[in-house]
Image (cartoon, rainbow, N blue to C red):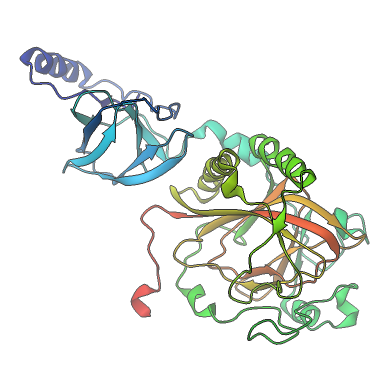
Length: 402
């Protein structure tokens, strides 16, 4: 464990001598191995209220997280040489991280006052346990020219990325027949203050220069879902849809979607907390691996079901909360040749068309790179989950300019 002298504070001299002896024996010795997260908070009937003080003399900014009974981490504060006090209960679990490295996992005891002193462990910058697993899920191919993926003419079956030059992309958005490939782009009718033919939102373009890219490359990554995600999410949606649990979605504010003309469906994950929390937990691991940063969850919602004729304008996401994100492809029934790509616009204006199949997902930096689905959907259903995170300690980069 993290060596983490996570001793409950005692006043007895014998305990002080034992601790001193242990510390002296440790001088010059190799650091112990860092722990892996294993525990969840227990709900103990009649558990006592306790105070837990966390203390560290390490130079790092340490992040303290509470772990709930489902295993979901919630940021609780920072740990420094000045004691951080948590009002808690017996059985509650806390974790302390340096960047993405777990240093300590601690379960509160029944002692009314407890002190936890955090020391170092033999760390790598990221827990390597799942790096190979995630890397093996990456779907890497990007077609560098405006050519069909395989099989030609069956975009409903495509799992690929096409890079489309800026000028060609603009012509597609204007519905120029020679490059439209039979698709139509933009709103058919006015949506709020956006006229018919709109394909993108420009109101928030100013923020792009303020939001620094976290990853190398084009700002997105196409990959398969982990087995945990696939097994959790796909059978769940199939069963809930069969039971008629996909309801009419509430209006999406802002005029980004033409849901005043095409009614969206919604399977509310808030009503299924085990599935919801399982998605959050798994996506935090995946996105931290991709960004190489410790992340804080900000929003996970869906399952949103788009219907025939749906359009989602190209846009940038919230710059204070939606920094590292993912779209999970849960289900789709598209017409032959009716594949519906996520567009991601590069800083140079080129369009990347990202085609997914159920069980795949795309990670992306949505507050910096414009993205959307300006092509009109040709099909019966297209079901997505959206998951958003930000780096721990991240604040709105444009706040001082506004």
